[in-house]
Figure 1: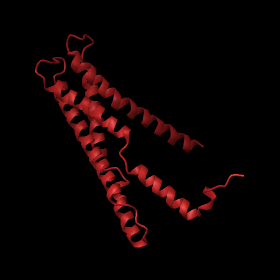
Figure 2 (figure 1 turned 90 degrees about the vertical axis):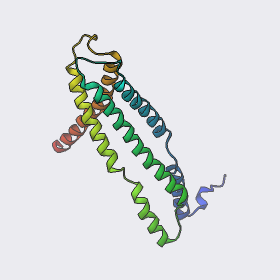
Figure 3 (figure 1 turned 45 degrees about the vertical axis):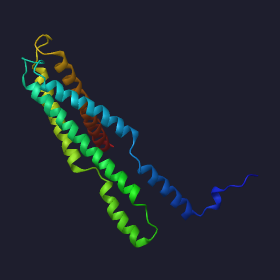
Figure 4 (figure 1 turned 180 degrees about the vertical axis):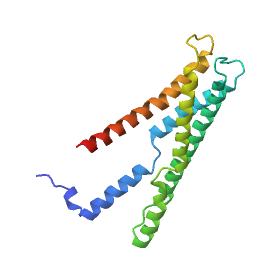
Length: 186
């Protein structure tokens, strides 16, 4: 019969090992975060670049060019805030190992609380991006169906941006309302 080495550890030792594993996992920046930042940054730079080019135009809705520049700037700012938070969290975990002493552990937990919540500025940036996407969708509705009135390099990225922001937002809102209503009924 094989010897169960896991059973030899006390519950406290198992807890400490699991805790160390979760800390190591939290101490890295996720690949998803890096890929998301790269994709969003690329799209944001495109919006700024396309909005500032004088050769591209949209006579049906001239506000779209300025709107594209603002959306790109807000996206870059949001990603900068998000990555700054991720890097700060990573550095804290890397430089501040979890202490075993109870008094220092309380101090460490107090400093770590700062990294458990998303920064409020990042949430405010997403609110601003949602509002901008709403304005963009309104202005895009005013562009006539003929593609001659608005350059494709302005129109289609704007539609994609508004769709990527507004569709998941409204779907989340719909799910939230459905869950709340379902809970009240039962």
